Length: 318
Image 1 (spheres, rainbow, N blue to C red):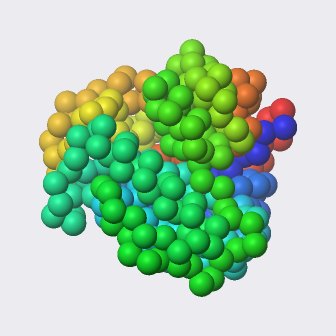
Image 2: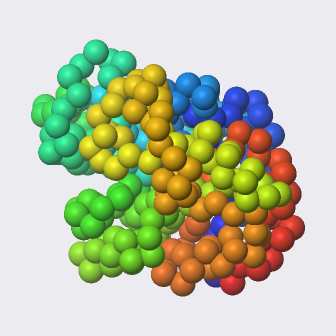
């Protein structure tokens, strides 16, 4: 049976309220959680963007859930610092933490003032970061001169078992590349055939570990309200790469999404007031082979969603 988790969206929810939400998620029957890691929201309407690593310590202390985070080392974060953060959480909460590593978005990374590299350079930089993080978690002293620089770094506090480093991918090409180094794969909901192709690309290339899926959804008591929530909060997230990678402020995302219609949002968010419909979609994802499925209700109010899905959806999931 798949594991069903709660996605903690720092771009949308104040960290104190998000902490209450993840505690409620555990009480409602969710058995895992994951966290975003942004400096900027996707829209001024979302209006938040707390520091995920501070919050993760509090959330893991407040619950017994396993947690993951999606992170982009190499520009905003030096890989040695991310290795230290991963190692500390792994040491404090053994076997409960994983980190998914990706190439990032300009909206978070431009704050350093460094040039935003083209995709091929970002990919090569991430590969260097993965090797650096793995070596540090293994207890090695690391020096490295390349797209990132490390000088005689060593982690003095490490977990007995290094946390898993997961590949983050939305395309067949990236999934295949992740199979070279990742301990598992995470992607986001898409048409079933796309998800089948992405997961198959990872497995066919020799990818090991578990397949995880983040599902964007919107639920309310009626369809019109569910659609309005998705449109208000998530219409700046409908753009395919490279747009979503290269726009660098929430204000720019708001400008380019001014004329996005609700029908476009429903192509990337599962929108329905029918809890049975949501359960059927989640079962479909599990049947594709996804072993961890993280639910992200794109509204800013989480309590009613957690109560409803805990009572009526989780019991329907096979």
